[in-house]
Image (cartoon, rainbow, N blue to C red; front, side, top):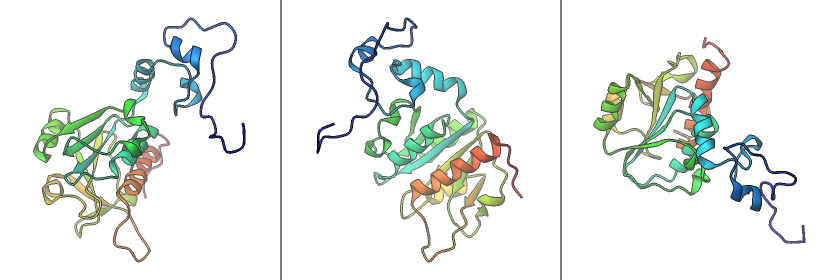
Length: 209
């Protein structure tokens, strides 16, 4: 690599005889695969990657309220993809800033709900309990809460947090323990912590105290 050149991401064109399996993309084999995917999915077709992820998606969903064009949503989607969430639900405005997702939204199911009522109808129809994440006076600690295997973890806007409508609609609202001077943490960070709590509980079978 010459001085000052951008580092190359991914892999170059396939060397040697081409694989014949259906999931390989001839264009990527010929030109190289510069996507941000794990090595297992190098040279795979996009639809083949999504189909393979669908086989092992976890049972938790993630929701984000988007009434003021929240810039955190892209980061939440990226983390949801990392933990292979069942889906991400955007409540409110359909448009959101995809830059933080780093193209992971192409592999993650994203569902739009125009209102909290619409989200609640989806949860009822699919038998998925709604759990809010915020530090209200009536919140219960995430650290000691036994997260159900099937659930939708709902996060509010950066700043105002969960809307009152979402607060009242949640089966429970969970708070994350904090020990510093600030009242709240970044919504994307809170989402990552909560998703990982689900992973520890249901993938690694670590019970809460």
